[in-house]
Amino acid sequence: MVLVNSHVYFTLDHVSEIESGVAPYLRELANWKYHGGNTQGDRHTRNEVLLATNQITDLVYGSSEKDFIAHHKYRAQIAALSHDIGLSFGSYDAHEPKGSVLLQKIMQESKLDFGRADLGKISIALGESNILVPAHSTLGKILRDADIAYVGRLGSTAALKRIDDLRDEVRTYHHPFLEEFARDDKTWWALQVSFIENLKWQTPQARELYDPGRIVLLERIKDINAQVQSI
Image (cartoon, rainbow, N blue to C red; front, top):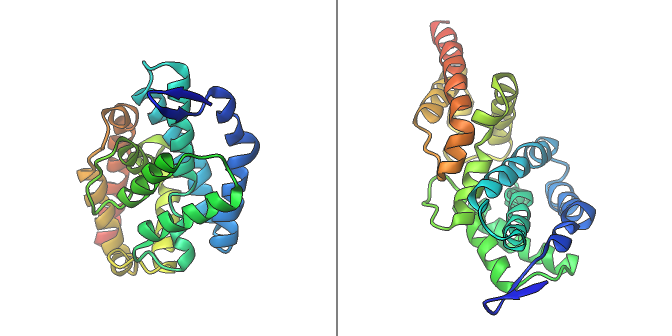
């Protein structure tokens, strides 16, 4: 680690721990021990949120010094891997703040040398991942965009699979707002049109990366919705 402006920053060597130790640890502990084997959530976290977080973070901090980028990327990856661990309590209800508390326990158990200030910023970002509350921190905005990047990053077929998985997740974990929409095809697909059509990216970097794909997916979703509504 290096000291920059009286703050400890992780270097590129420390970032290598993401692949060798931290990511597998958090993945196993958060997505399996605490989630009870939520394979859909694990797939979404590893194959979608983590990769999108890397892409957005690279662009947000792209002009910065390498170790500075490495530190922010390390922090962002921890946030991405743990963004939905609050679902381990069995419900969407307040799962973001619950996940923040659980993350602190996980980090203590991992005995990872991680700064209190960084853990605090990650906890704030987890709370800001709720689309119903404003995201003010840079990390919160990155995480928010990464969580919904599937609408523009995966391609229409894979994005539709994520939407199906999300519908199952909403019903399994009893989302206080979305569960009612998920019960019926007509309300569910109408909601998807509204969500994707009105989606606002939190960062210009995510907009640049994913908005072209969002527009393509929107037309596909509109066609599906039209078919469903006509039945």
